[in-house]
Amino acid sequence: GESVGLHLPTLSVQEGDNSIINCAYSNSASDYFIWYKQESGKGPQFIIDIRSNMDKRQGQRVTVLLNKTVKHLSLQIAATQPGDSAVYFCAENLFNNQGGKLIFGQGTELSVKP
Amino acid sequence: ETGVTQTPRHLVMGMTNKKSLKCEQHLGHNAMYWYKQSAKKPLELMFVYNFKEQTENNSVPSRFSPECPNSSHLFLHLHTLQPEDSALYLCASSQDLPSYQPQHFGDGTRLSIL
Image (tube, rainbow over all chains, first blue to last red; front, side, top):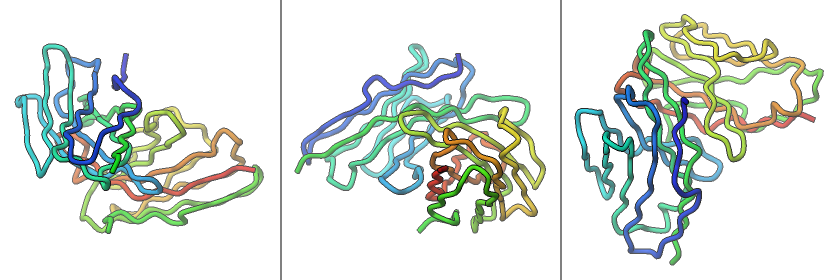
C-alpha cells in the first residue's frame, strides 16, 4: 500500500560515532526521496534529497543511499553530535497527474549520548 | 529561522468554538500544504494549493476549511472540532508541486480541543 516504513523507531548512538537510519518504501514508481529532521517543538527541517536516477548523494556530514532493487533508503550521519538528536523522517514522492504527493514514514528517534 | 511562519503556535479551543490557523511563506513558492501530525503517526496530508487553486483534499472532514487568498498565505478555518482533532498542524510550501522539490515546513500550531 501507500506507506513508507522505518526499520527501527529509536536509535541511540555515542557522540562521535556514525549513525545509520533506515527506511523502506513500498512504491516502485516513487522517483524522489527526502530526509527530514524534526526537533522537539519545531517543524520538519529538510536535510537531503535524492532522485531515483542516483544511488548515493552526499551533503555536509550526511549521506543518503538509495537501493531501488530492495526499495530501501538510508541516511548516514558522520560523527554524530548531540545537536543531531531529533526524529528523522523519510518521505517518498509518489508521482501523480498533479506532480506528486509526499508520503511520510513514521520517523526514527535518534538519541545521542555524550 | 524558517521561511514559513505559522500562528498561533498554540491554540486551545472548545468543540463549539471557531478559530483559524494562519500560515505565511516568504520563499516565493507557489504551492502550499496543510498537514496533520499526531503522536506516533506519519504526517497526514490534508490540503494542497498550487497557484492559489486547491489541487487536493485528502478526504478531510468539512469542519476543516482551507483558504488560500494568494500564494504567500494559507489559512485553516476550524469549527465544531472533535477531541481527536487535537494534533500539531503543519504548513509547508514548495516552489511548485512536490515533484523533485523539497517542501519547507513551518513550526506548526499545537491544537488542543477540550
